[in-house]
Image (tube, rainbow over all chains, first blue to last red):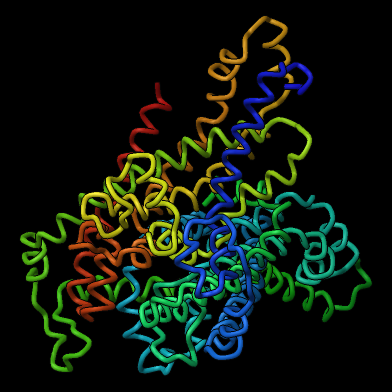
Length: 279
Length: 310
């Protein structure tokens, strides 16, 4: 379908529909930003104005200086970063095995990973709490990293496999004929070629861990191990009138996720298809 | 070679089976970390969870833990809140999937042209998907709140609502709050998946059809839809299961209220485990949900088989 073949009314409709959708997609985020910079005394009097007559960053300074949010932010960064790194390492290995080897039990492994994508994870909330609590893994960031890593490995494996599938086998076969072990060929030749796939996997897992709420709520009850979602939610239920501060905190929570999104945006269409079709 | 010393020949013979053993084990070494992790963190708790369904497990009561048979399931059968949550799960899943799919398909078709500004627009329309789910929930809860949000005022001005009130506290309308948030958040997923499928359709088929005089609508029906069908089937099936399980938005926006009117089965499980600390009852409900989802997948697979055979 070449673009020149379309008529002008078509393009008006095309851009019109896209503009409507862009407005729908961005409006909630815009509103978040707007309330976060509205001074408290204007919050109600200018409730539905599209931009306040006076803006201030007071809410941001308060949140950064006088609340626990910097701590929550740090916790979330540690948890999401460690989870993303661990999952990518583990999934690179298993994705490589799925892509290159034919082994007994492979179908079972695929089946196992598909099933983990289907059953309600909320089923695991109670048993995991019971298992982790005597091990000291409740109220601990390590506990969260372990849980999130396990949850994200299956999808990440399918994703990595699809990237390995795109690299010709001859490359490591040539290296192995030259005397390198398969693992060395994998590390030194294949992995560097899969960097886009690694970036995409890191991004997906980081965002997923950054957003996770239910297990964080269940496993963590102390502020010093709270991740951002838990902190924000407890803030909402405790001080539900400080809308400006809550939304400022919300905007701050958005930053890392959006940065990662912009980084991986290019690989999204390719990566997600591979993942969605197989897992 | 005949001059080869005997001991070397023997070593060679001994090394071969060993090497074969190592190379046979190699794939398992690569998958071992994944398998161990999934088994320990997902399968073991799953099994334990299934056993809780038949036991009296209350976290605050140290004397609980005894076997109670089908007690929880009998309670469940007469639990009005559970049946309400079943109905809500249907409404929530159906409305979310249909709306996400319809908007996602339109968006994918719009983005499947080349036009100036496409890269920027694509990044912008996919952005909601990067927003953490708890934050999308809070964001929409605030938009529906007449104190800080514009939506109630706009809906009242348009005559949709009689007065600018929060629909999240209206028992009849509350479920639509999380549904709107879910649709907003989930459209990009469908759009990305369908767009990728659209881009894999060979362009020469369209060109050939255009030469044969097929109009845009005919090309859509005869070429685009058949090519998309497998992706649509798989994506819709997986998303249905995923959305039926997806409790975050409801927990954040309404906590199941008012009066359990927005409680879906998975949020009800979470409420039982997290608020009442009744792990036994929560696991019993979870077992029912698992059974229903398995039955659903089974029916879908059967339908797919019979369609393929035709």
